[in-house]
Image 1 (cartoon, helix red, strand yellow):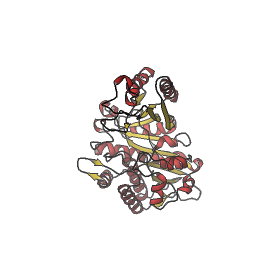
Image 2: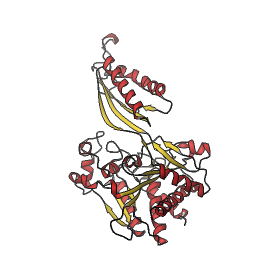
Image 3: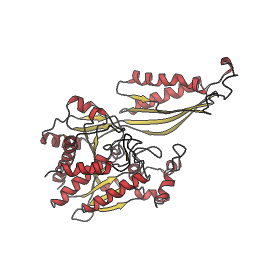
Image 4: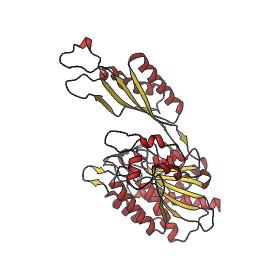
Length: 407
């Protein structure tokens, strides 16, 4: 039983036109008009494939192929259609569309599974509104009410505002929760977003684990004053006070372990005028590691340094621990890749995914295919049609192997 490579490629190209601007890539920020167009496109494709479609309280789009019996568990295949600003056509979208293609092939061949099959497009995986992976976290029952009211940056609506705008009641977000016992397993196909696979000649990778992500916003305080009339010795410049952290943080992470990364990706100053000494310097801090203890130690060291040297405030955006994925599913995926004649090598993920949300509560498996040049989150993001087809075929084979095991 084979997936239709050309049909899957057409889907990727068709969806990739929604939110596309020449030279600037694809922009489908969560719950914007472009994202809503993509969701409607997906709903129509799911219905054409014979799936039952619904939208839950967290705006997740769910297509279902029901099993013959009543009360069956669910095998979920998911990812996301939302993108970063000026992103690519593959990140997230491949996982959803490959799941859709698997559902089509199963339905066309009259295959009965021992559980319902669901293909899910999760809301705001990329964190347009706040912390990311919102839809999957709502599905496992995380408490999100306070987060939904927070505004990430000026001009971006809160999740509460956007849910209201699309006709959903934010007060009913708890209805998106699913009992983990209902879910047999969760599977996700994704582009690697790195260059280990392409450079190493790896065709397919069962994902062994996903790094934890700790994110913070640090505000260092100073005193605004005239830039021309205030002597250097009399200044309290918030940017100058914060600057040592910009080179110390990467050094701390590098000294801790080679596999850990630390990034300051956003810096703003207030008042932000060319002739005013900054009174505040606000910057983001992101730590990533498979070992949560490493991130906690760097966080504590940062806070200790700030307490000793500057007046500052540290706000926690979120702390998501690293996870290991299900050993049985890793083996099934690995065997499926080898059966397809693919060079299959297990790898850990340095990026966060919806799979990370499910791994602590349900058996979770993830499949990587190569990214050309290791590029992602940019217009140049690309995976060869052959790589895409390999991943979708292994996903289908994994579903069938798991079905045979459970039958």
